[in-house]
Length: 209
Image 1 (tube, rainbow, N blue to C red):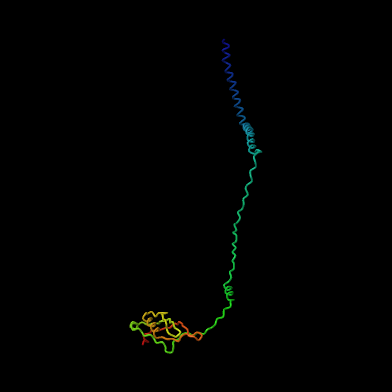
Image 2 (cartoon, one colour):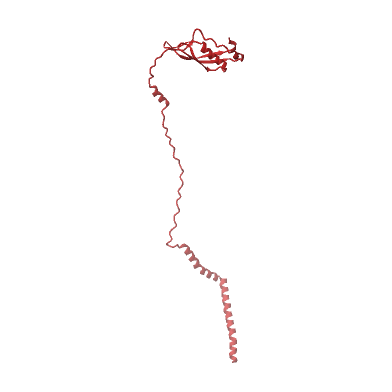
């Protein structure tokens, strides 16, 4: 019994010593490998296949992928050139052409009949009397009368064609022409005819009778 107990007590001590030696040996190998650079080479050998695989995957494309489309062609803008405006001027006939056509018509022959206007006869036509009120007011001026003369030379009508500016002087001239004046009648082709003439009467204070 005593010999068996002694054997069981010594066996665990030997195992612990042996394991401790193995651990020390492994650590020593690792230290040597790190010191000599063997560990770095092992790491590079492990990483190298991985890097090659990654590069190959990036370069290789599947066969089914279509190639990228070509870039679109850019069309250069062209300068805008406006169309020229064409103006067609239609010539119009000058007025001279119309005048020339009209002038081609020959004038119809007309008979020239001698005519002489009415004139005061030898007895003369007396000056109208100066209205007293117009003389006191200092009024004077020139009256132009339009006279209608008959075939016998009598004044059948008288009117004011141009006033003197004073009704007293105008009325005096009209009254005198209708009452006192007489003319030689107008003659056309040797025959007395009625006519109309203009006759002026001047009123001046220094010439009043």
